[in-house]
Amino acid sequence: MPSICFFILVILVCSLRAALGADPYVFYDWTVSYITASPLGVKQKVIGINGEFPGPILNVTTNWNVVINVKNDLDEPLLLTWDGIQHRKNSWQDGVSGTNCPIHAGWNWTYEFQVKDQIGSFFYFPSLNFQRAAGGYGGITINNRNVIPLPFAVPDADITLFITDWYTKSHKELRKNVESGTNLGIPDGVLINGVGPFRFDDTIVPDGFPFLTINVEPGKTYRFRVHNVGISTSLNFRIQNHNLLLVETEGSYTVQQNYANMDIHVGQSFSFLVTMDQNASSDYYVVASPRFVNSSWARATGVAILHYTNSQGPASGPLPDPPNDYDTYFSMNQARSIRWNVSAGAARPNPQGSFKYGDITVTDEYVILNRPAELINGKWRTTLNGISYLTPSTPLKLAQQFNISGVYKLDFPNKLMNRPAKLDTSLINGTFKGFMEIIFQNNDTTVQNYHMDGYAFFVVGMDFGVWTENSRGTYNKWDGVARCSTQVYPGAWTAILVSLDSAGIWNLRAENLDSWYLGQELYVSVVNPESDGSEGALPDNTIYCGLLSPLQKDQAQRVKFSGAPSISGSSTTILVLLIMAFGAFIG
Image (cartoon, rainbow, N blue to C red; front, side, top):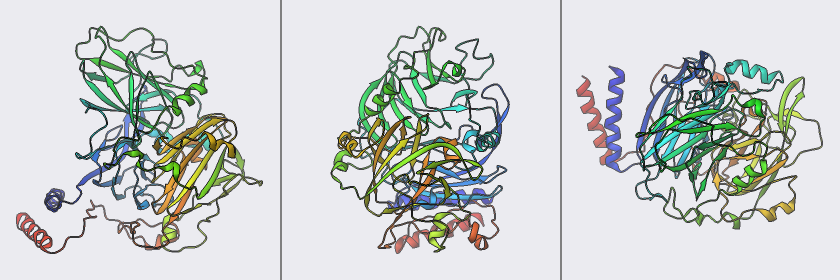
């Protein structure tokens, strides 16, 4: 009865909010737990949400408020992070170790955030303890408001695909291997939407694997939202005999271009329009295969089936060809060809190109060099500018809120220093409303990918070799795409520009899970000196840990409802009447 009453009250209050013209609220109640699955024919524990693997899709619209009560039924602490969601001036909802204490096993916590002034395709996943290797991920689709037209004809349907390298070892075994300096090695397979490959080759794929069938109708156009939610492998995505018309990536509409295939690196999301314009003599292959690897990786190929309703038979023959496995030049040129659609409106009516980022003066410059794992104090660690991030017991954001000194230092160097690598909790001291240039220099032998929470940044340049001041002459200062993740090729650099207009402490990290887990992350502190209340307040359901543990009270399990806009005058009267009516109903 209490849960039924809760949801009746939610309906009543939501009706009031709608009557008042406030931005809508949507409510979710999730339980994160282990479930048993056999995506590659071997039973294993995976992380599901409400028993689903992959988890549910958050399908919302620009400016909606999202309230998600998360119950942790795992056997270890949990945080969910919302990759690409720009929690405007509210890093409290970020779901990473620098901003939140973990949700203890058996506890729950309620995330509340607004998808303010955003559109596009993103995903969420667990951010602690290598858990993403076990699942726990799902999609986030943010739709345009009705008053903002799409820059293309409305598709007939939306299809979300999660592509990921996958290991049959548990995430706990994998993290132990990484800690001991053992490489992840070749994945046991590549999954598409949590299942293994179609049996495209009897010598590679054993009989009995479950696989994905995508049912489509001839002549219709579908929007495919494709997310690489893997842990370390760049994947090439393609659909046999079908063009991929790129229209959006991570919250930005792009110049519309056809591709036969697309390299999708770890942590990246793309939207393609695909028209079912082929004859239906057979089904077609949908493929996600590893890039920049040798033939020993052949078993790690994800294959789904595109099935026309009038198909005459199963798919057969060889898979559609990928690009040359070792051609990083092809991949880089493809990445450079992705451009911002400066004439399209997105979250607001004004064109995306109205923010003329190329005319803004840079206030802060960082050249960030990564290196492969090395021994620091007897442990395998990865570094950025010679510093391996040391996670404090007290989250950075809480330490800042309570003025606790000694938890972190605002001294992250703007270039590699001539000193031994070390463990440290060193932050970038960002300038509020400043304009930061970050150059990622990759000294590793594999593609490395980087993500920044809370922001979209402009990818303005990438090239092979070592970045120099003269490299700025190659920057795209007009229509470089704005996104939240970018790849850096081995022996190469990538440059981004970001406007620091959102106060908070924001995570900047490697998306390659092994690199991230061993220390390739840092945080950017952006403080509004005017303290005008524009930054989100400390949530009343904050979990405390570390030096603030004494503030934590025992947590009663509950579904929490809060975050309502302030209501006054006649609106208060309406709310009181609603609550009185509700009380009479349950009495």
